[in-house]
Image (cartoon, rainbow, N blue to C red; front, side, top):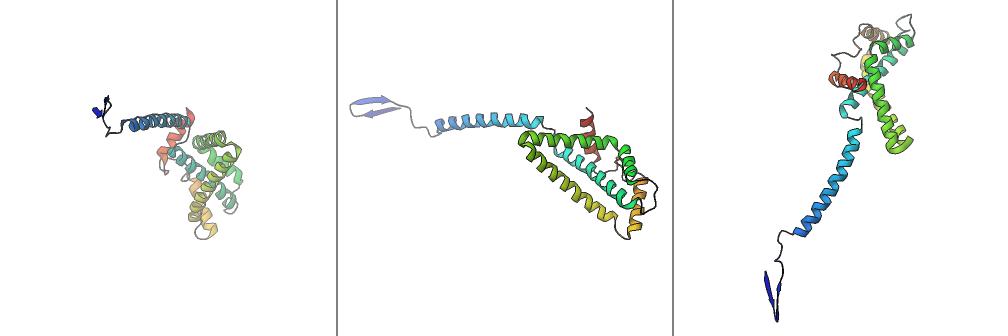
Length: 186
């Protein structure tokens, strides 16, 4: 565009209604943000954490808590000869693949928390996981312990003896549980 001032003429660029300089700054910031997000994404990609694995590990941990509590409260009450520890061990052996996968995954989640924020973050995460597992297991136990305690314990021990409380294809979230096992066994 030619702008004529008195006594001289100047070649100057015309007005930029599209505000190109600002767009270039924004593009630069966008690229920088994308690089940062990409680096964070790469860090996230190295993390073992996924919602599906979290869910599967919690389901397995809940089962372990439920069986432990049933063993402590019911084995002697229903007149079983074995100790609560052997009752728990028996369930653990039948479900070893799942228990081991859950334990490995949760330990790695805690290691990641510690790497990110030290022991305090690890301890906070462990406390949060345990509280969630305990409260969820407690809800299931309340439904199992409905009615007279002796009758409820007999039903619960029967469920354990018949494998109903074992992890199987009928368990909620079984596909996620199997995926967690495949991850843990690789």
